[in-house]
Length: 117
Image (cartoon, rainbow, N blue to C red):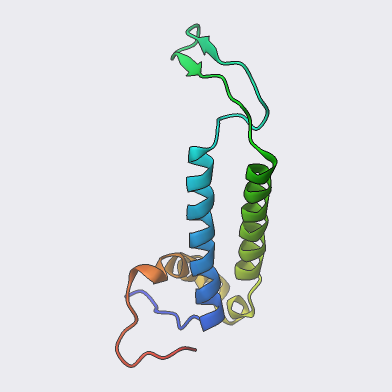
């Protein structure tokens, strides 16, 4: 049976925020033009699959700033999570399993009687 880890509340909160930031960044990048800089469209059918891109107006300064802000926050959270003091309490051979559980901890509701750590 897999070990269940009692993650500290700040680590859980950091992981949840990381999920949110990544979802927000992904949604933003999907709705932005394909190129940061204005570029003409192109079509290339010479490769193993045809590639087509419409002309891109580029990103506005506000859009670039928003992407940068989200990427910076994503990096801060990733560093916070990976360097958290909790990992020193987990035996090295169990850290990968524990990290995987942390990534999915938001998918399972806490058991009854569980409080914040």
